[in-house]
Image (tube, rainbow, N blue to C red; front, side, top):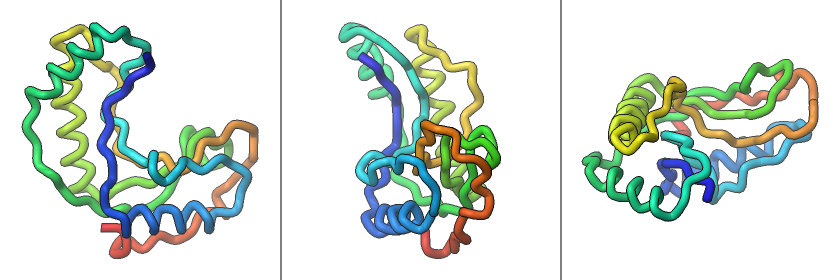
Length: 149
C-alpha cells in the first residue's frame, strides 16, 4: 500500500476559509478535496502490511501536543509560471513547530529504514495541476493571515 505520515486540520473554520480560497482562484486545476487537506510530514511510498505495523509502532513513540499556526500566503511548485501544485504556506512559528514534528517523524522512521533525505517544506496543497495551465501569478488572491489561525 502507498503510505505517508500527515497532520490533519481539524478546525472547520480554517477548512471553510481554505475552501473559499480554492473557489476564488480562477484557473483550471483540480482542487484537493477539503476533507483531504493536510500537511504531509513524510512520504513513505509503497510498503507491505508488516512495514505498516512497524511504522505505527515507531510513530507511537512520539509525543507532541496540538498546536496552532497561521496561513500566510499562497504559492506554487515548482513555480507560478509552470505550476504542478498550488499550496498555502504557514507563519514562521507554526512552520518551525510542524518542521520539528516532521524531523521527529523522520528520526523514528529512520530507525526502521524509512529515513527521508528530502528537506521538509511546510505547506498545504490546495490544487494539483495535471495539464499545463501557464502562468498563474495574477490568479492568486491576497490572503489575510488573521483569518487563518
